[in-house]
Image (cartoon, rainbow, N blue to C red; front, side, top):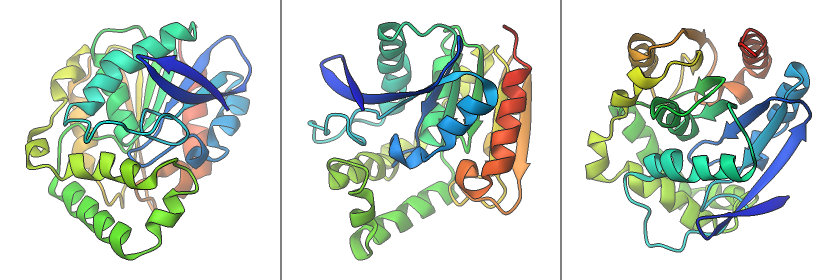
Length: 252
């Protein structure tokens, strides 16, 4: 696993596949390179593109969180500061972003800030905070304190406690209830594919409708039955096929 220093922090990253164009994967709030499993490699093979997967600061094998907390604007800072610097350092131009959950929100902020993109895939995105999100995140805290969730996260993250708190504490901060990124949606002009599980325990179709209604470019939606918060794990074949088809239709 390679490492690169961005803004004084070492980030772990990996390449898979080959090709002139690039898919960039942005993981969920408790995710990492390894938790994508073989999905990036399979999508790279299906599209003929290369894929970049990386661990955000505080996750996976990247530097462990040094600050006591990251602030409720952590997704904005990732989208507007870290991600542009990472893409520039790796000489990636006009990628297609493939984001899941928090990673999808980061991708939407990045796209809405006017930076050039070939396209955007948002799986289980959040553009505002719903009661169902908070209830599930509260349930996750109880699981972390009473089950083997900490041990399972330790397989992927250098410091599972700090990683969990990085995500959980921010989402449960009362200040975060007002978090909303809908103002970025009209600035999104590249093609967008939104994939949402109909049984997602962290969000509803209201998130999808807000995106479809407000983006300025073309927007496609795939709602998946028998699917919770992770389409690429719960419905991998349909998700893979949908993204590959979307990518194949993008302009060069």
